[in-house]
Image (tube, rainbow, N blue to C red; front, side, top):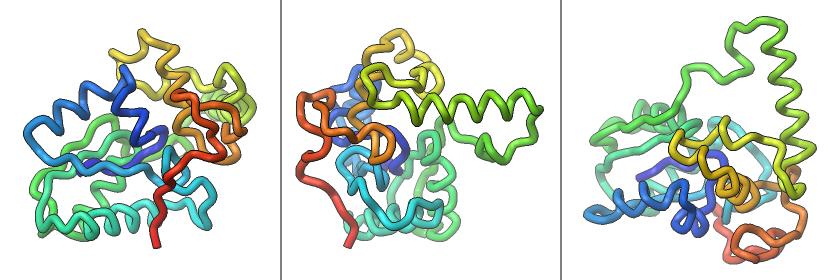
Length: 190
């Protein structure tokens, strides 16, 4: 099972030159359960809560719905922390914990210089102003695996396909030519 994280899209990721090789290999001989984190990809774009606890609860709901008693859990980027929290809460269900590109503290909690804090604030401004506006403001080099950084265009497509309301859901066609404000089916947790 792969924990949901930022900038995913269940359908597009299987075609994306960035992630398709990984997901195809993982699913070749095993069942791979993936989902889009709330506010991303095909998940509901408008949600009441975006929080760490909500992300862990979503993983719990997906694991329960999959009806798998014990499974290996893959966390990528922010999914690492969510995977760790899930494993702590449910050690009997996690056979292996695989973590890639995670961090102990998010950028806003790390001890940093005033200059670094200023750079972070500028990056947030770029993200809010540019993501989904033709040329996304978030450089793909900041969030893509090293091999994928060579294909900056693919990084921009991932951003546009995965963007949530407030950062890019503007009704223009996504990477697959579908309007982002009418993507269907949408996944929701009830």
